[in-house]
Structures are given as C-alpha cells and as structure tokens.
Length: 527
Image 1: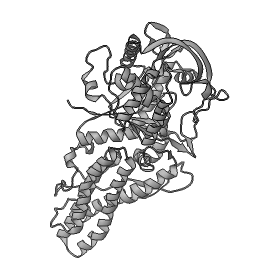
Image 2: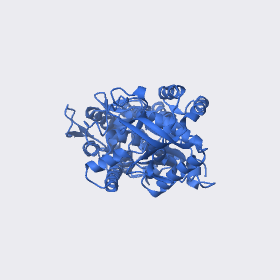
Image 3: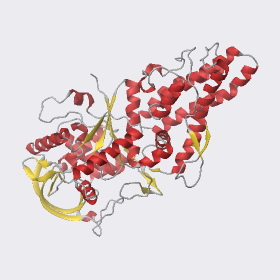
Image 4: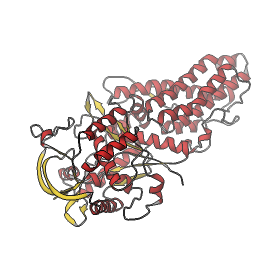
C-alpha cells in the first residue's frame, strides 16, 4: 500500500463538554479527510481525548464522581457532538486506553534507556491550567505569564525525570531551515524559530503524587507527564511500538502525518517538544503543522474555563450542522482569529446557503418537474454561454485542490459559491420560462440539463464541507449511490444521464430572521 493521507486534531481535555472552538479544529480536519478520500480514494482522520492530569482530576472531583466515570461521560459528549456535526473520523484515541498507555510506557522506557531521559532535581513555578513549567524571570506576581491564562502558579520542588530538550536546539533549527513548510502559516513558524534560537531548557516529563496518570516504568510513585503521555497519541493510535523492529502496517502506511492541526496556544508543544521526541525515537517528523487562530467573542478566546458562549449542542439544534460548518470555514481565512457571532451564522445561512445555493437547486429542479415531467432532458447544440458555464464547472476540482492543499478553506468555499452565483446568473440570462413560452423545447432542454448537471457538480464539490446538504441535493437529483462515495472521475461536467427521473424538490435551507438576539430561530421563508 502507498502512503495514505493522515490528518489529526489535538486530543481534547474531557474536563467539560466540547465547545464551538473545539469544533472549529475538528471540522477543518474532517473536511481535509473527506476531500482526500474523495480525491485519492482513502485518508485517515484521528481525533480523541487527553484524559490524564490534574485538570481532569480536579474536574471529576468538583462533580463528586470517580475520575474514570467522569471521563467516560465526557467522552460520550464529544462523540455525540461530532456525530451531530457529521464528523467522520476514522479513529478516536483515548489516553486511558491500554493501546495508548502501553505504548507511552514503552516510549518512556526507550528514551530512558537511551539516556534521553534522566532523573534530576526540579524547583520552579508550575501552572496547572496550562500544564507548563515557568522559569523565575517569566512569572510576575505569582501569575502564569500566558496572556490567555493569568492564573496563580504553584511553586514545585521535587525530584523528577527530565527529557534532554536542550540537546535538540541545533537539530531543530537545522530541520526548520531545511523544511520551510513545516509550520504554517509563516508568522507562526517565525515565532517557533525565535523561541528555539533563544535557547531550550530540559523539560520535566514526570509528576510525583499525581493520582490520575500512567505510572513511570520502574517508579510507580510518579506518573508520565503530558509531553510523552498526550503527544504520543499520534503514533500510539496507529500501531507504533518502539520495542518492535517493524511497527504495524497501518503505522507504515500513515506515518509521518501529513497535517497536524493545532491552535496557536499549543504551538510550542507541537513545533518544539514533539519534534524533539520524534528525533530521539529516530522517527520522521510530520509533514506540516498547521496552526489556526482562536475563536473569539468580543476579542476574548472562547474556552471552557472562560464560558460566555452558547453550548455547542444548542447551536446545532438551532442552526443545524451545515450552517455552522459553513460559517466557521467561510468567515475568516484559516490561521487568523475568527470572531464568533450568531448574527454571522444567520447572515451566511440567509445569503450564501439559502439565497444562492438553495435558490439555484430549487428553481432548476422545479422547472424540470414543470417542463419535463421530472425527467432530465437531453442536451442539444451548445452555445457560447453554455460552453463558458461548462468550462467554469470543469475548472472547479482543480481550484478546490489548489486551495485545500494549503488549507485555504475560505477560498475553496468562495470558489464554489462563485460557480453557484454564475449558475443563477445563467438561469436569469437564458430565461427557461421564456424558452418554454416561445416553444424552444430543444434549447430549453439543453439549459435545464446543464443546470441539473451543475447541481450534481455542486453536490460533489460541497460533500466535504456540507455533508448533509450535499446528500440532500444528491437525493433530490435521484442519483445512484452515496454522494460521499463517488469516484473523483465523476467530478466533471457532462456526467449526468439524460432521461432519469428526479425526486421532488424541497428547500435545502430555511432562512432565519436577522435580529440582535439570535437565541431562537424564526423561520421566515423556504428557499
């Protein structure tokens, strides 16, 4: 087997229910996986939960629940949310699973045996929320220096195990220079380079007295810390085993990952610590680490601890999965911060989805029912206007590929919407109702065939982005099979078979009244 496209999200803390910021990363990964499965026939998408550590332990105790019961419940919340969002992951890794804990222990032992981990004395400031150690000069007034945290830090003094991160400064900088696309966008890569150039300290990779964690091999009083516990999920989930001369076939076909998707708050962990661990294990590094911006509300990051945002499941109940997916990927270039608002969701729903896409599909399918008894007509001689539409439609697959290869989700959706707008303009210019009135049946058939075929192309183009709407439009066209399982060869103009009966047209999206308080939806029309 050849290399399969492998995309990952970070694994999320199950110390609360998933929020819209968590969904942002997961939707992006889902789109990439779906596109590559469509484009190449296969892909692999990994997500999961990071279930060890003090934050999870504290969350469980605050609920007066056993920790395992707490994480089991939280994990189900994540899985329900992803199902509701039509997230189609291939694997969901939990760090409490044996398949992960066993690999984490083996990795720790391997690095210890190689001298990459050593036992030493640690004394300094520690932030429980960020799970980060800070040096004295970084801490002001006993507060975490992370601008998005600012919580009180604790002074920790203990004998612990350390990973020799300081040994990898030169190797990392050399790797960065020889792999200019390793971290994207460039502004984040520059941050990483500057950080490493200033110097690296060895990092603590164990914690003593932590109730909820993976015991250090040979030293059960201590638990393996997050750097080796959580980060190694990307290889434990796909069958890596440091004690075997040959890892699993799945690992060989997937690693190195093509894209790690992370938020900018965990950039250092993934761009510095994780590559150094991989170097110590003599494993290749991921192809690309893509760092997206934060979801904000009124300029502040959306997070579980900060609150102040609507529950994700409530948002899905109000707007449905496709409008939320569309807004998050369409509103702002991926990589920049996105200021979240329900007014923004409503605006995109009413304009791009209802007015443009919904209007195109409904008017075309309705006219085929009205003028051809619901049967797709056969095209005749094509005029210049027809050829222009076909050319634009045939250019779409290459355009989407170009944008998604650099994770420009917004631009990919804009290109699809441009074709939809062109389709509506084509209907207005050709005026099928006038052709019917004038008795120009052959020309009418050609126009409606081209428009029905454009709807078919649109369903294929939108299938990674708006899974529900794409399936709905495919069904209304009464096409064979599942839109998400079509071969990529179908993604070209002229593949629609004439003479086929279409289904009954129905609105793809319902408009919602725009108002300042969008806490409940008010349907104003069907499109």
